Length: 233
Image 1 (tube, rainbow, N blue to C red):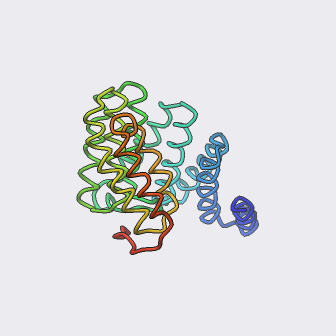
Image 2: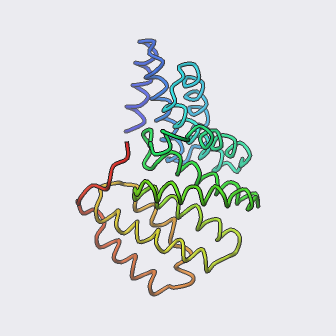
C-alpha cells in the first residue's frame, strides 16, 4: 500500500531528524489523503508541510503544500480558506518560476489558478475568477504543455458552466476533452481517465452522440504506451 510506504518514510524522517524529507513526505501524504477521500487528514499533513516549508524557505514544498491545502479545503466546502491557500501560490509563482511544475502534473501557476477559479466561482465571485482564468490560459498557451492547457481550459470552462453559460462552456471544454484523448493515447499518466470524467458532463447534455463517440475512442485507446508529452521543469 502506498500509505504504508509513506508512513514508513515519515517515521524514518523523524528518526533522522530530516525536516526536508519530513516536509516532502507530509506533502505526499496530504495528496494521498485527498485522493483517497480523507480531506481532513489531507489538511493536517498539508499544514505540516506548509509550516516546514516556511522554516526551510523551500519554495517547491511551499507551493505543493498550498496546492494540497487548496484542494482539501475545496472538498470540505471551505472555499474562503481554499482561496487563501491558492492565492498564495498565484502571488509567488511569477517571473522565472511561472513555468515550473514543482512536482505537480502541470505548471503550478496554471493549476493553482484553475482551482482558484473553481473556488471563486462556487462563491459567485465571477468578476474575480475571470481574470485568473484568462491568466491561466495565457500561461498554459505560452508553455505549450498539454496537462497545463487542460487545467486552464477546465478552469475557464467550469467558470462558464457555473454561471449557466453552456455554449461558451462547451466551446472551452471540447478542446479540453480532445487533450484528454491525446493524453491517454500518448502518455502513461494515470490522471488522464479521471480528467476525462471531469470535462464530459456538459458535452453529455448538449451533444450526447459526439460525447459518447469520443468516450468510446478514449476507452479504446486507454492504457496504450506512447510518446511522452513536452516536459516542463
